[in-house]
Length: 262
Image (tube, rainbow, N blue to C red):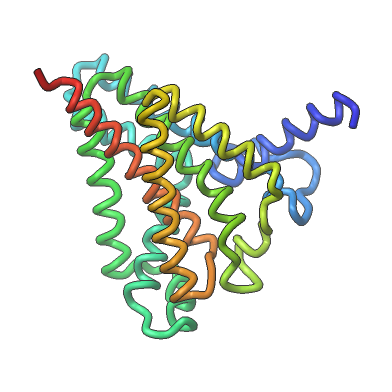
């Protein structure tokens, strides 16, 4: 393949990944065909960095304007939610409603397709926003908050490619089925980018712990959805991103707190 074709493919994949994960109007001019989204999953960590940078910029501005860590952290979270169109929060809420409210596989999938949010979904959203908000507020320092936001978004999305590769789809239609199974090359690149981002913030030793933590999160969720649904859906992918993001932000807050101890 010629270098110009490789570059064009890279740009197309990044635009697909960004348009899939955010509300930014940067989708490729040409039609996205079957398998294009799966092939572009390697670029999801780059999208995560973009979302994290948006939240970090808002935190820097809010902190510079004199706001305390709590309000600044909430504004940063709102910025990431606006940039993504709350797509992952929506998936988390639907997943919580389906897994918590349905008794049979078909009923769970039916609930997950319902746009209305139930009690389980509302509680999941409160927990997700609350945990991330308090963790970022605990970190406090703008530079450290920026790193935590960027790395958590990138690492969680890197895990998405692995999760999509390992866990089959639960139904023949829907977002996840249409996306398809990522090729191994895309999965490896996404994983490598995620590890690099973690190493940038945590260092080599702690990066291993973070990878283990994300792997445990993914294994628990995978086992749950395979047993209850037979596989994953687009909502499950959103839930995985949220849980992974929470795990990394909490880890960053715990490490930051430990470093401050005398």
